[in-house]
Length: 309
Picture (tube, rainbow, N blue to C red):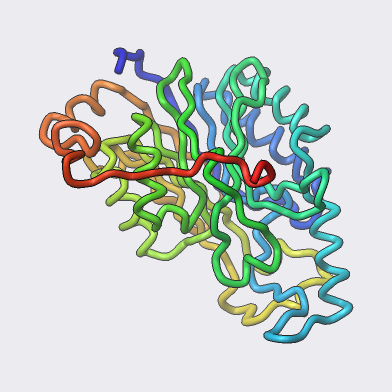
């Protein structure tokens, strides 16, 4: 690890304009402009900010049954998802370049060949270049109606001018071997965009910070039923419990909360990232260094891309 100059990071907690990619892109631009006033070198947006996490919607599915209305809603979600690369990724790159920062954002990706959707995380550098994409390797529960599975080819840590940057999406972070695959690459800044707003999620991120000796940035959407399009509100299951209260947070390499958690509102969290704190934290625990036992444990990661099988 090379000594890095401390820098400001930003975590954005907001609601997208659900099922409306154009207006969501406009809102992303506004939020980045707002965050840029603090001159962060890294900005993190939540899981599937484009076109939103459709909490409470069933897409007309039950075991052994589908509805015409549910398929119509899926098409609507698909139409407001984005291709990678595509016009929206060009615009996101422009946002990153104008803000002179690394931009990491969750999106629903529309595969150009198969039309399958993926829950993906995109990485842009300060020059506006798309430097990485990670597809969620295991959508959770009913998410599997919407999103396909990624593979091990993009479980990657990116060498950047601000350090080794990487992460996992939502409940991927509950997968110990997926985390270990990142640790083995020397990750320093761990990103965990999510749709989980429960108290237990805070415990998970604190544990990951202590385990990895990394800075951990967690970003979630904040929204209520009122954020949904009017014609979809009646389709929501258990509307009284479908809100996302947020819980975005930034945690130090020793598990100390340095910003947040933020609940029940939109907002932007800022915190300084100091690589010296990572080194200090590794004095007594380094999961891939002096605290490792490679003579006992090993991990193999299949990095072959699925379409080359």
